[in-house]
Amino acid sequence: MIIDRLSNINTSFYPSLFAAAGTSGLVSRLQAGFNYLQQTDLTNTPAGTVQIDGDRVFAMIQEYNTKPRAQGFWESHRKYIDIQYVVSGVEHMGYANLAQLTSSPYEESKDLVMHEGSGSFVLLPAGMFTLLFPEDVHMPQIAVDSPHPVKKVVVKVAVED
Image (tube, rainbow, N blue to C red):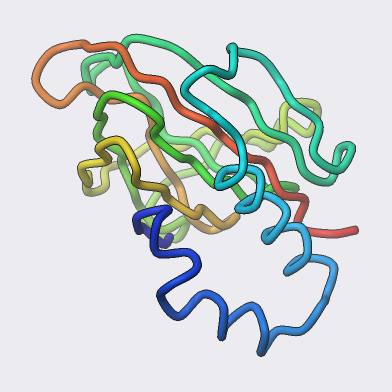
């Protein structure tokens, strides 16, 4: 899992990382996802799904109230990497490595594995993103103190072509 500010994408180590990786399909898809986040007026974009590169890269614009930790669940994905970007509001994001938890059977139609166990939580205020790989189990949408509105964009990036 990587946690950072979207504003660092062009000024931190990311340009060197992307350049060193070349133009592989995965790197191009990740760049397309970050370009969408940087170049779109996300504050005024309505909730829904936006195709960026077919089913290889797409964005889900979400608006919801955060929930108590007890209502959350641990999840991971196999086909997609998540870029979860908080547009407005603040939430806690749970994190645990896949090896730390007990997994349920994979639901291929939903690209979803549910997990049991515990992990740690980080604060994600507006302007922050998490980059979640298949081994990164996460629990999104968790309230900091009490439930509050959040607008978030989840960019789904296909692991394989």
